[in-house]
Amino acid sequence: RPHARNIVPIPLPEPPPLASPRECDPEVSCIIPAFNESGNITKAIEAVALELQRLGRHFEIIVVDDGSTDGCGAEAASMIDEFPVRVLRLSRNFGKENAMTAGLERAKGQAVIVIDADMQEPVSYLEVFLRQWDAGYEMVYGVRADRDDESALKRLGSHLFYQLLNRHAAVRIPAHVRDFRLMDRRVVDALLSLPERDRFMKGLYSWVGFRSLPVPVKIEPRHLGKSKFNYRRLASLALSGLTSFSDWPLRMWTGVGLAISAVAMFYAGWIALRTLLFGADVPGWATLVVAVFFLGGIQIFSIGVLGEYLGKIFVEVKGRPSHIVAEEIQGSAIGVRS
Ligand code: UDP
Ligand code: MG
Image (cartoon, rainbow, N blue to C red):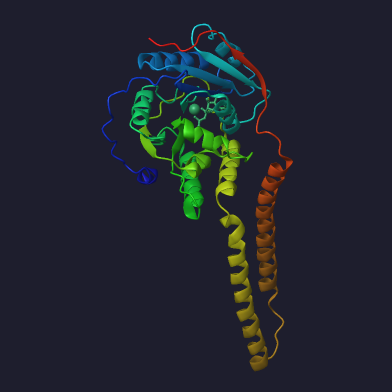
């Protein structure tokens, strides 16, 4: 399969035995962004909490309720006495990238894990992540082992996206990465120090660097409900990624303009020569019409590209926060350790 080629099979170093938990509380913060995940969220909290308890870690779970309308925030809040859960309710739906940022801002742990609420990412990987963190990796991230569960159109789209993105990007953004990952405190602080508002997280993770280890993850089918990312949202995320991490869409127009001008000059020379040798002839309206439409199209398209970047500048200049936390619900259960 074409996409399988992009996943570099990195042999995992033999993980060390699980180190004894660091003496800090909480040691691990686990962020679960949730948008209308009623029915999934309690299952996810329980699965994560039981796994982290089994691994003997001090932890907190931060559920970011990203403007849900199905009571998923209240469902999460109903678990605050049972597990160390905090619920951040955003004032509306700000999108997954901003929901994760909200979680990162509030996380207190020395390591921060991000995991989806729909249980597509098996919690058994938390053990792998934590072991590699103990071994000294500052970021351990999941990479899709395959995309077999996705439609052909989605696969083609993501393939094209990563091709375009990495064509001239200053930092390489590995293909098929997940937000599912563990980050050391240093990485989290670095991410939070980036002031931009249009937060394409997969790019930001790569941009900050640090010792990072990809782990191939077998993605499970969604527990309940369906994906929140329809084609329109995916396209807008892709555009945000492309314009945040590359400037070739802007720059290529210099090349295109130069090339078209060069062709036009040769053509002008040829017409002049032909007129001198054979005299003028009237036909040629087809060439004219084609040229007008072709150049008109290119000009409008390139102005559109300018507009994309201008729009980004506008967003940054306005300086609005990337999200607003309406409420934080917190219980008394802390530092659960088996
Ligand atoms: N999500 C979110 N805000 C949004 C859209 C999604 O917090 O606006 C969360 C969602 O609840 C889930 C995670 O992001 O926990 C991944 O979303 P989804 O499963 O729909 O994406 P997919 O797995 O299809 O990439
Ligand atoms: Mg999902």
